[in-house]
Length: 560
Image (cartoon, rainbow, N blue to C red; front, side, top):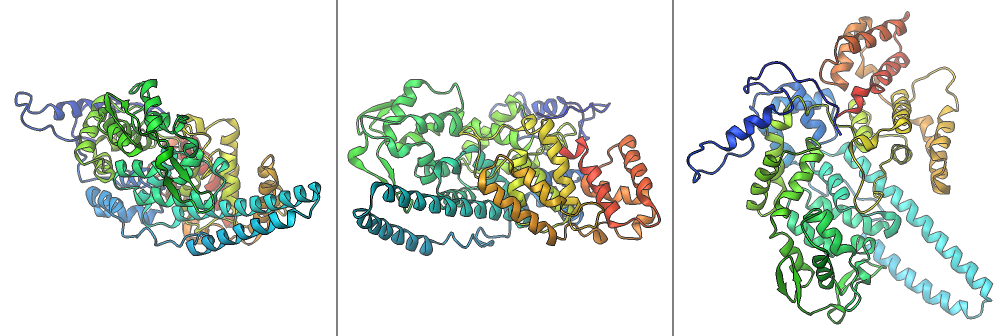
């Protein structure tokens, strides 16, 4: 959901902004021109002028990425709108620029697989001379060790991805990986194989700006997805309908564009796929595949899974479904039908390529409308990464992002179900809003000396870990120790001493950093009054941190 804004007066279509339906009226006029010559192709979505404001550039940086510092926004703004969008769509950072977690190494994982198989053989041999109780104890200890290793690796993978979002020079690619992780939602809580979750994450990154139809074909054989939706249990005569249902309802067509009969028939086509839990190798076993005739969405044949996916992409709903979701993710909750139809036409014509679809969205006049800018509630990941970018901190205390994600309700690699996370207003309630304020306080404070805070960091970490099991308690203790050495924001750079002599100039500088536009006289006045009340003889880093915390605890800062 978005916070509603009051439309500006005036109806000039030459200006950005206006009431909720203003740009849509302009779109309809452009799309129908010229009205008497149907042979002339329709225009694309009405494009925004190349001249743009810093606020619009900041909007692009937030929505098509995770925000940025004033210098980063200034560089994007200096490019001009089209060049800026193209720089996001064609980043100069290769996919392998950021090293993968050290444990995620094919050779090392293969060696571990051989060692596990050898240990299993030895365990079976030794088990023959054990009592039943001894065997059960040995098996329990082996399971616990495997679970500890999996937990540690998953935390490392999550920290790696979060760090990548912070450091990447390809923010749109990472934003799309997050979108696709939600779209093809797969949870480590069921998969329980960190290597397979990392493998899927790399697959999503490979296609994040590429061929969506091909990615959907790859998802059919993705081992993490197979384990999550039980595809590996689907055999001839006993088809499992999970994947067939979700590939239609959540991945390609949307509700109402298929029948229960279509699901049952498609489920037969997806039989015979198996996955080796040790190495993630996927095979299609012919004798376990139902080779009989099936009828799916009006087509009949001896289809396999790939052929069913091809049939899905022949449907008009497949051309409309993803553009609609991307519009909701990047622009607004309710995409107008005319917009979806226009985007769908281009999406189909491009062969379901994501890059041209995203380009059309980010260059559209609608994307920069005043009813869209700062009108989307930040997801927890957006909130955390954007805050760090705006405060120009290169990292967080080791493990803190794990606790913060759990506290705010969005944990990487752990979406709540196959439908993914609920977005918009679902991110905000009394508890999570208070958590945002507290987390902003921890991050803004950093290593700044503040009276009465000795030991407080560790106590707060313990509270954040409550109910998270032994793993989270271990992380909390680690974070508490790491907090002592974490420097936090460099306020000498963010708020130079000379600037602190004038509270109004200091507030103006921080508003430009965190909001990029004037929040209004009342809000600005509150910030200035607070700054004046804290000024004292010397405006210390501690007072600057408190002022930043105040700004980040406002309702406006929760909007993207």
